Each structure stands twice: as C-alpha cells, then as structure tokens.
Image (cartoon, rainbow, N blue to C red; front, side, top):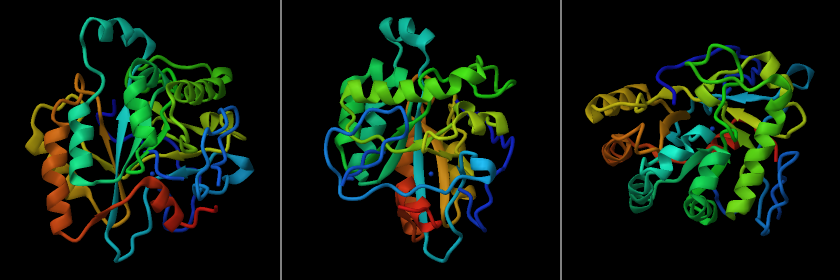
Amino acid sequence: MIPRVRRIVAVCALGAALTACGGAGGQRPAPAGSPAPTSPTPTRPPLLAPGPGGLTPVFEHGPRTPDKVVALTFDADMTADQGPRAASGEHFDNPGLIGALRALKVPATVFMTGRWAEQYPAQARSLGRDPQFEVANHSWSHYAFTDDCYGLPTVAADRMRADVQRAYASFRRAGVPNPMPYFRFPGGCYDRRALRALNGLGVTAVQWDVVSGDAFATDADAVVRQVLDGVKPGSVVVMHCTRSAAPTTERVVRTVVPELRGRGYRFVKVSELIGRSGGHR
C-alpha cells in the first residue's frame, strides 16, 4: 500500500520524461530468471535504457505533450503472512473493479505480487490473457527494498533479485502467458542499492506521478478529487485492486474515467507511455 508519494532517489534522467496489464504481445523477451512465454506475441514491449553504471532505469510518467493520454495502474498487493487472512475470508482481490474497467473499456496495467497470483491464479490468468490489461511485477513478497518504508518488512539486498524472479515464476504457474518486464517497488521505495541489485534482470522500474490516495480510504469523493487534480498529459496514476485495503477504488474508477474522457483524455497502458518516452524495442 502507498499512503503518500515517496521519492527516494531519482537516478535515470531521460530528458523531460522519466516516468508505467497483459496485452497482446513475436515473443516478448522475459526478464532474466523469468520463465519463457507460453505463446507468441507480435511485438516486444518497450524498455528504457539502463542508467549510469548499468543501473535499472526508472520511469515516472510519459512526455508532457498536448496529446492527452494517461495510464491507470493498479497494485495487487499480498504478502505471504496474509495467506491465513485470505483463507478466513478477507478479500485481497477486487473482481468488481476489474469488471468495471472491462465494462468501461479502460486499458490498464496491474502490478501483481507473486503471492497474489498464487492466491488468485484464475484471476491472474484471466488478466494475463486479456489484451485490455498488462500484468507486471510487484515482487513476490511485497517486502520493502529499502529500510524505513512505511513499516514494511525488508528483503535483504542479496535476496532482492530472487524475489523478483520468484514473482515471475508464480505468474507462469498461474498461467499468465506474457508478463511485462516492468517492476514496481513495494511502497514505491528504492535507492541505488536496490537499483544495482536488479541490474541485468532486464526490467524497467515503474513509479508514478499521481497518487490516488485510495489505500485504506473510505471517502471515494476525496480520492476522485485527488486524481482529477493531479492528472496531466502522460501521467501514471497509482491505485490498488485489493478490496480489504482499498474499498473505494471501484467507485473512484467509475467516476474518474468518464470525467477524464470528458476532458479529452485517452487511457493507455504503461507500455505505450514508455514507448512514447523513447523506450527501445
């Protein structure tokens, strides 16, 4: 969950644009350590070039052009210790939200933890096979990759790479055919050590420039206002798709989408924004 914006280190300057579920995709190159895709796709997803010293690149938003495009992203958070809570009836999924996005025909990128895919394999598979969505990596454990990250437990530096790879393995077991080579740090917390740890995985780290504030929110109208006040051409909006911790998100989406369309915005996946920012293919 992300209660507020946290920018720890901005490392990769790509001109004015440093800004990010599974679309139809010849074979997408899987990040190092991830299983090979099970079905061919017509194009490879765009990636940013590594930063100085080969550091994992970071993307926050697309170019600020007159073309009004915006990417809605949804974090599917779940940790291993939440398994018993799910077994007892707590909902970490949000089929109503996904249904709303489908009904509204809104492309979106879902940043999924491996544990979420293991808990909800049918939903993970459905998202991964639906060309309206992209599935991207949000770690396996949802442990933080830095110290002092909203109270999250911390994954050791020598386990960060394995945690990302484990999530891709979970996606494959759930039947997600072509997960994207995009990674979102749990809590949005990262530093140079974390970026170095992921060197060579072939992923682009995706942040955001608009925090919806939907995590633990009970006032949908306040979340709507925060999104509408923050969106600019090329924005990446971070939201969540867990009923237990983001109960207002479906209502927010049903309000925000028609309002932004009325303002001339078009919804795109993160991959399109990265491509617009000079991402190589």
